[in-house]
Image 1 (tube, one colour):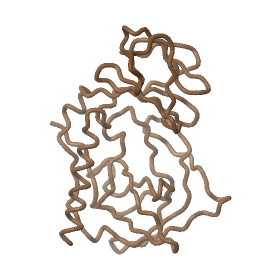
Image 2 (cartoon, one colour; image 1 turned 90 degrees about the horizontal axis):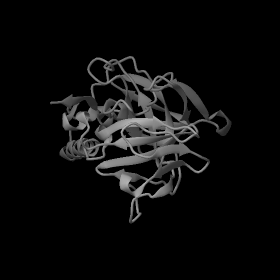
Image 3 (tube, rainbow, N blue to C red; image 1 turned 60 degrees about the horizontal axis):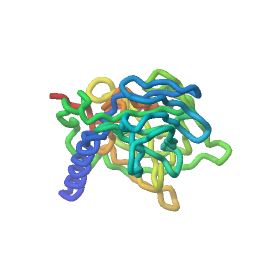
Amino acid sequence: MTATAAEDWKHWSDRRAASVSAPHGQLALTGTHWLEREPAGIPGLPGLWWTDAEGIRVRAAAADGITVAGAATPVDGEALLRPDTDPAADTATLGDLLLVPIEREGELALRVFDPAAPRRTAFAGISAYSYAPEWAVPAVFTAFEEDAAQAVLVPNADGKERPLAVTGRIEFTVAGEHRTLTVSRSGNGLSGVIADATSGRDTYRFRFITLPEPDADGHTVLDLNRAYLPPCAFADHFICPFPPPGNRLDFAVEAGEKQVLTR
């Protein structure tokens, strides 16, 4: 183990804990409210909420205190909140609450983040395996042919099945085992959803991985020390895809994050 690699991992781990436990981090999510075309109330929030072709609409009075980010005064009448899939996405606040519109497979919802959420106030950290350099291994990415790129239907944490876009696979050898995993393009890198022999026992039922952008020959690095818990490990109201077929490893990956700790 090199001190630099171990220290980098420790900094990454500390940043993870700070991010999920921030006032409006993943632990603060208290609801994901799916909306319809007809105006309706949302439990715990003032005003009426509905969707149209542009995003989420809210009708409220200034006294309700709903303020769209960047606005000088609260909504008094109607306002548009564009979802996270829009380049000009909006958020709003109501006191300490953060209101975030999202779009998933053409459906719109409003997420509510509350710094006083019980799971946030009870958070005591993220348990993880100790850093071990043998779990960081070379990998080779092979993109699917353009016409073979696919959306695999997988169960999600909320019980629904949704398509998961997959764009290629990585090959690697770890713990003496040669394996492949299906992955997706994610920004300038790759991402995947995996499970292994520790899942649901020593670790959460599945985890996420990210890999750096492959070089021209497809070479990258799979660092399983940075396998991390999905958002739904921190709050029940997140939608997280389960691993696609072939991404359940039959050996124990004793690396990365394990579980959310509570006081």
